Length: 158
Picture 1 (spheres, rainbow, N blue to C red):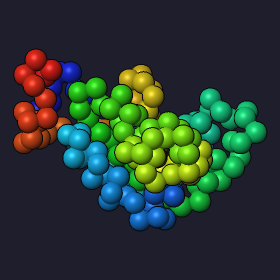
Picture 2 (tube, rainbow, N blue to C red):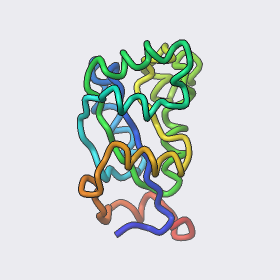
Picture 3 (cartoon, helix red, strand yellow):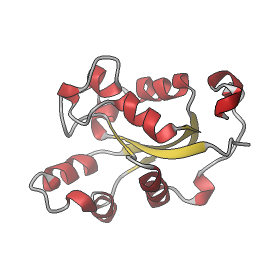
């Protein structure tokens, strides 16, 4: 049902995307690019989830504010699949600091902030595997053939 070269990556659409009514616009961009949604749900992040997910910045002075922001409203978790999906999603989002992101990227079009920057995305294949497992159970991830797959990739890329 999927190409052996397909990767999965996690995206968390942050509270600012929810509150600014941009969920549909952002999801549309991923789908239009040719990425496949294989899992999606709304989540109210717990302290334990945030501590684990952001363990690499837990000692930074900005962590408490980031944690408060990420737990202020639900987020939408999405598992996207596609060839080179991790890199494609990060490129589509643009740099972390919205004010530095170029126009045409999600952050460049919708964000001026470092924290309120629309979305978190996995930064490597290994991180994506761990993050997908952190937020989704196996029964929440679906495998299916996407009808436009052959139009999204050339034969030598599949």
